[in-house]
Image 1 (cartoon, each protein chain N blue to C red):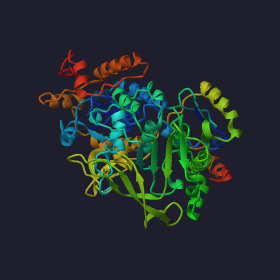
Image 2 (cartoon, each protein chain N blue to C red):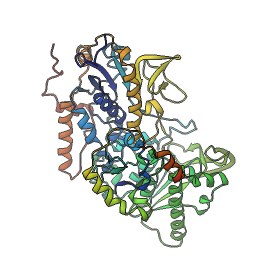
Image 3 (cartoon, rainbow over the protein chains, first blue to last red):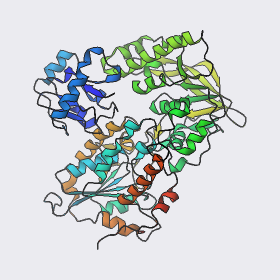
Image 4 (cartoon, chains in turn brown, orange):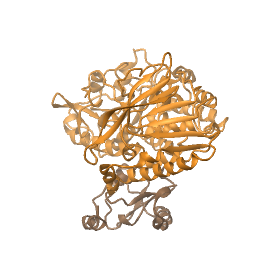
Length: 101
Length: 473
């Protein structure tokens, strides 16, 4: 059971998860990140690292996030690995506030 | 003169310890703009620290992080020097003389003591000993665990306690195809344990388990996890703690404990014969471990929680509770040990530092750095060490212009130093021989690996090879 990045990442892209990931399983484009389920070892280190709780363990997440399982798997295949922390998107602070974190 | 930056004369860094924090430090150094050479020094012949000897054998997915370390170890500019103990075979000052920088990443290998009567009575063990033993760590290989008593008590409610509990509770056939050490499998197969009591100082909302580990304890075949329904009643401050969105893990734990409490109600009416039971207890602090020659019971103070949310402290009341048992596992946390020649914070069991720079009597110890559990204390999981080591290496890189004014011999200097000492270093190729032997032995038993649990046996495998790594003069 992998971990997945859900919609809270959109508009934030804080990328703190990347420095906590022991296996470099995060891929991304200019908007957000995705987890490669083939590489993720289910350690959960990224979950508390995300300032907007965008990351969930598939085993205990609300059903509304189910579509994200396939989206993460697909996007991770085609997007490059994000190896280092990057600056958050300019919209990140407004988005964080909107999400209530 | 500044070395490294212009890619001719390399910067030499020694990393002491080969667990996750050491490997992530090595990775960050080798990826930096500087021309770095990393020499990793490990006390055992085998690398990977607690990923090899701490992560439970039934968590193989987590252990697969080793593939990342293997890739780092094979990078250009990386040297592995196993079976060399810093502080015994070579001193810190010798390392500092031979390397531009030294990163201490040797973890926290001892246990915190409870400081109560009977702590060391027969039948009372530390979780560290038990974990090291079932994981085939040479230091714990010859310990004798007597699992002939039907009741065990685990003191502590963190993930190590969860591992100990799971290994004791799982049906033996569920462990046979893990990489658990054979000597442990034999003893566990004869285990008479029926009840495991897992005891915490504070309440269910403050239990340190990650929800993932706690959930697993409720999913063990032929085993029920129980919580007394009254224990799930929370005081106002605890209710506020689990309502905080930043504390999502505690809320998940609380949901699991409440599920266990539901099962407990129904299991009291049905038959539970032939099942193992895990029973969680809260708000109990150990008072004494009692017994004549062996453990017979543990006495606890009943605690009350006082204080505001997230700062609640457990105060003992006059109430005392006892649990009859034949076995105790103390799992109240690891503790770092000091190293000769390195400052040490005795109270916290860590090396004092600022962002990874070691602090000695108020000043930076030039070129000395620290990362991982010996830097921040024994908290966090594998990935936490990556972020931690990135911070330390960032400090180190910032200091490099000042640290690289002289040439240092690095790896070659280290090997030359130990050449005349009674030391038998193990290099990467030799570790890979041990690794291959272990996986081949595992294959024969349908296990991912059968660990070699004695250092002499590991070295005997290598005896046909040159006694010392070849160093070009």
